[in-house]
Structure formats: C-alpha cells, structure tokens
Image 1 (cartoon, rainbow, N blue to C red):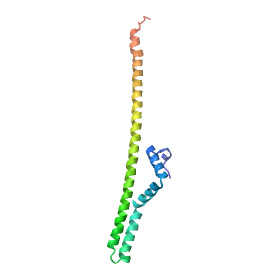
Image 2 (cartoon, one colour):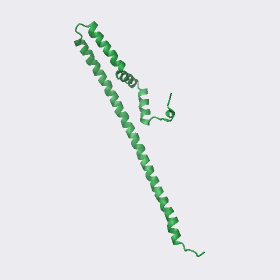
Image 3 (cartoon, rainbow, N blue to C red):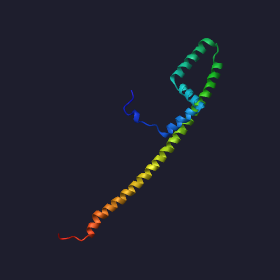
Image 4 (spheres, rainbow, N blue to C red):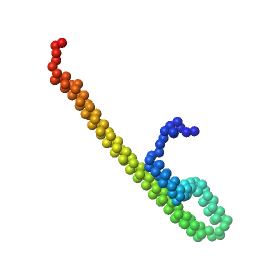
Amino acid sequence: MKPPFAHKLKHHPAVLQSQAQRAASAQLRLADKITDFAGSMPFVYIHAVVFATWMIFFEAAPWPKLTLIVSLEAIFLSAFVLIGQNRQAAFQQAKADHDFNEQELELKTNTELTRTIHKLTTELHRRLVEEPRNQPRGNG
C-alpha cells in the first residue's frame, strides 16, 4: 500500500536524466544489473557455497586455481564498483548544478520581491505619513 503522499512525490531532474541515460545504454543497463547482483547477499551466499564445494569436493589442492579465479573476479568487480562510483559522482554533480541554478533563481526572485516591497512600503509611508503632514488642516 502506498503512503497517501506518494502520488505527490516527484523525482529530481538529475534523477530523471540519469535514469534516461541508463535506460538508453545497454552497457549501463548491464553494469547496473551486475552491480545490483554483486552488491547483494545472494551473491555472497552463492560464492560461499561454490567456493566451499570447490574446496571440499572438486580439487585436492584448490588454492592455486581458486586464488586465480577469485583474483580475476575481484578485478572485474572492482571495475564495476568504479563504474558505479563514477556514475554516482556524475549524478551528484548534475544534482548539485541543478540545485545551485534553482537557488540562484530563487535568490534573484527574492531580491526583486524585497526591492518591490521596499518601494511599496516607502510609497505607503510617503502617502500615509508625510502627505497628511504637508496638507493644511481645516477647523472643521
């Protein structure tokens, strides 16, 4: 069940851009799937079972081959981790750039509003306080 406010939530433009880029690239989709799986507990369980089975049942001296395989796997997995970190850094930079631009626009708008309010307040003060002082008072 979705929370009542879920329909009101919108994604950050940098999130939408990142999702579109990942969806458009087969390589990025594959890298996402691999890193999602490699960063999961099923990945750990499968490796524990495979390595234990290998050491117990298939090789009398499993360490040289197993060490080679694990080292090669680590090389490829570290490449996927770096790919993920690079994408995350690019995403964070895009989000920071967007947020900066939005804040600058908001600051400009607030400055303009403050100036307009100051002008209106000055005009009201002039009309309500200064003009009545300058008009002659009648003895009515």
